[in-house]
Length: 566
Image 1 (cartoon, rainbow, N blue to C red):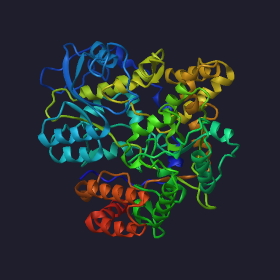
Image 2 (cartoon, rainbow, N blue to C red):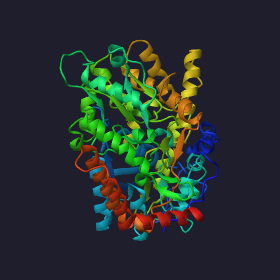
Image 3 (cartoon, rainbow, N blue to C red):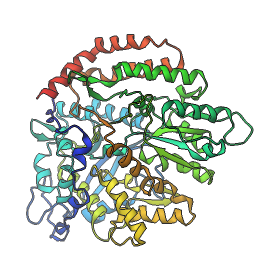
Image 4 (cartoon, one colour):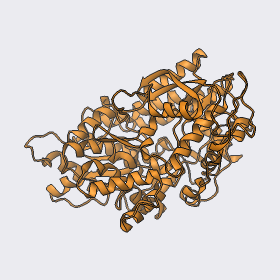
């Protein structure tokens, strides 16, 4: 079993994260690049020498295979390019002499998960693969992946090590077994996925409605968006609140966890009860209250009648067509799918808010463990240090002086595209990086001088300038990093007001989680959906809680509390 991570000190995750010096932690120069290359002997893992450092180019080409998942429609490629032939793979070849090829490519997160699970079951995995925590645990137990402890210590650049330790070392600990490192965690910020409330403010203005201040008022707005023809097309074709068939879709648009949070319910998070014990958020009484409200909204026609069969892509089409007025989504929602609507309807306008409460107590937004993906290296691969070098080079390209910002973001077919996703290893980020970037960019906007910005921040600056000059293609990033953007809202509404509810469990899956979690998740999803659709009575929630405990939930709760006590 993966090592249990030490319990986090302090009452709030924000207090921990806000002490991290983000961009400054990545200020070391890349002296390793100038060291003379020396390739390890064929079949060896490449013990480091003075001639073989974190970014040293191999004398002779080495091959590395990987599997790729194209997660959503925002992945766009320039003419003649693809996930198999992209500029990041060219960089690997030209600067490191690593020839990266894709063994397989699949579309969609569900298909990707199935493909990875099938590869693990067959014992035939590529040299490098991105997995989740459960898959990592299975690979370790099956002895299918390399121990990266020594190659990480030797080959990880200063920038890589700084980023991996920026959360206090929790990400690395989550990838550790018996004090040995078996994966490169994809570090991230919990604030990138915290739910925000997005409302079409041009519809508010068209109907002379005030901005809502609580959930009751929000539902009045939703009712007006359905019944009062906010788009003025004389047709009954608009919906109040967007939701996909997933209902709970943490970190993605169209999930309703932000709505649940308004009822002080925290689905799929582990929280402390009054006795200080860790309990699973999805089975608490507050969830039943939120489900009752959602069932009422559905019965009144304020939710799409067909949401139960629509995935995120289908709901995004409704957004782009101007049929949706309210949704819950993370900070990047303005880039997708709202930018698609802005392209189609330039006068459409959205504003993001902190989540609203159903009562007089301020609502807290749930915050999950920021690391949920890991990169593993196949057991027996001759050059496990190559994976570390891929991580090093993308961080060097991201932060080094003179770096080309188009390595990370470009405009393709008139739309902003995060082309860093082409890379075989995603760069991840420091927890407070984007909030820091917001402040840097706004300082530059006020000064009219972007010379102090790093290449990534320059992209945000240029997008804001572009939008301010009338180019709507810069709208999405302006709504994220601008003066009243997502990170300004997150800092003001959540961090400064201590309105966060961080998950209290951030270890590897427990034994029973590995065995039963998929079944429990399916049970939860089906019951929540049926109650909202009116196919089950509200009291079916109590039956669900009993079933959840009986088929493994009670045992998982015991294991989670044992982890917390160590």
